[in-house]
Image (cartoon, rainbow, N blue to C red; front, side, top):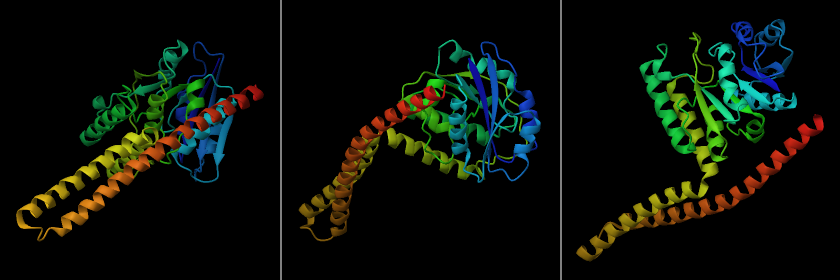
Length: 315
């Protein structure tokens, strides 16, 4: 059994050495523990710090591709190393290495395919009141969309079984945290969480600049992934809302026509026609997207088979 701990990094020279030093060299139930640092186009000495810290596997990108892409690169590299379990952690030292045995335990005992470390955001004093509220609201929304019960969906401290890692196809360019949970729910992977302790981080997030930007990107990611896996339902709701609005406006015109002989309110008739046509088109788009979704499932299954064959050949 091999455990691979991956650390996506962008300009983490100040904290990476301490983060690596805090990681366990041995974990019960595993014969090997490997550390992989993904240097996502850092402009500082992140890679050199990792090398001095004794990290044998460093994947460097010439440009910054974003956290989601760095995460996917790390998963692929860990699988090629022969990982049976993959742990993802941050380079800023927020997550404690001592929590890794508890994080991987459900996978070791075949109780889960994916485990998320629950920071219990409502108890973190270094989180502002607004941030705690947004964390709760975002987690509630993702739980509803994904059909899972994870209380802390933005936690980057998580573990994947080999099978779960093979099934992950991150398409977002913003962050992997929300998308992987939604995918796990839609692909019916066994997903659970464990409560963890965390360290306070002083530096601001490099993922987003301000709460507003984070909310906009997160909502967009959730909507996109939900529409990807439920296109017919998504566009049917949109089409129904448009057609209902058009019907109500046309009803208003009909009532006025019967009462006054049709003078005025021609704008309502035009707008009603536009809304009815647009709503019908939205439903047709949903139907086409649902048919395309069937092809996507076949493509994902094909990709999964190819990945397995590549890994078997490498082994």
